[in-house]
Amino acid sequence: TTALHQDAYAVIMDPFATAAVFTVTLYNDDRPAPVNTNDLTDVTLKPNHAMAIRLNASLLDAQTVSARVDVSIGRVAAASLGVDENGGIRASVGVPFPLPHRVILPGGFDQGRTDLIISNASPGKVGVGATTFGRDAEQVVGSLQDAFLGPLSAATFQTNTDGPSAVVVVPAEGGPGVAAARRTFGLASDQGSTTGASAPGPAWIVLPAISGAPSHPGLVIANPGSQAVSVTLSFLPGSGSTSLPGPITVVVPPGRTVGAPKDFLDAAPDAAVLAVAGAGTFVPAAASYSLGREGIATFAVALGVPIPEAWIP
Image 1 (cartoon, rainbow, N blue to C red):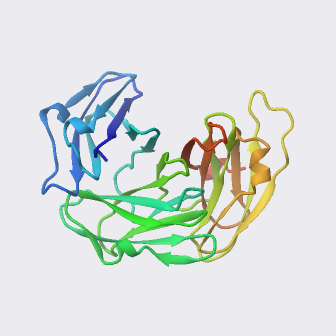
Image 2: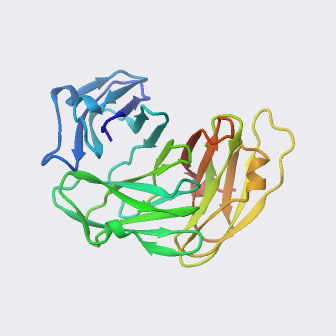
């Protein structure tokens, strides 16, 4: 969002030995057409460099801004960065084309408010719906009932969540895929955001989402499938690690999202966690607080990283 007191950036990185050339087009829900300016057309990025493009300069005071990055020469990685003048930042990695037909967005331990940002990159309108898989129940997201996105546009939909939860966004059957992200609001007004997974997997690495002590680490496991899944959680020791607790197993019922035990995470809050299913698939994420007098000054969410099948322990 580029609304008052908010700054939005697209961060573009060229990690290769040759230059990249790309064009940025902005989608939104307030104006009738995508926005593109000379400053965003055929931008050249040097090899092994990164840049941050301030979107407020091209599209100011918009509730929803989605940046499409089309690369004509080379390859790039892209992400969003949001800065709140009242404190806190949020970031999400970009979604590669082709866009998925299902997006699973786990999260939790927030104040109960969730924004769903959905972008339609197709030339026609598309219907979208969403379901929340919570700790105790599954329910349809009311703000997305019979919802449509116009062509080449993006919009924000609000919903409420309670405890660990996963929101599954699905475009209308037979329609094009969409890009989706989840913005959650922490207890101290800081925000966290993440894009989602297009499919659950059998094994993941979950990186820590804390930034210092004191901290309250959190990890959620979403099971959007129809069968229960048993997930074994193990710490990956760092260079300074000594003794760490052994693995534990968490059972996640079908269509539910649960949190990992607090005692387990508190034993090594800054360690990565290996999560492997005995059978079935799931999607994990870290959702944690850190810093401040009580360890709740900053809030962050980080989607797990899937392990390729050939490397699953």
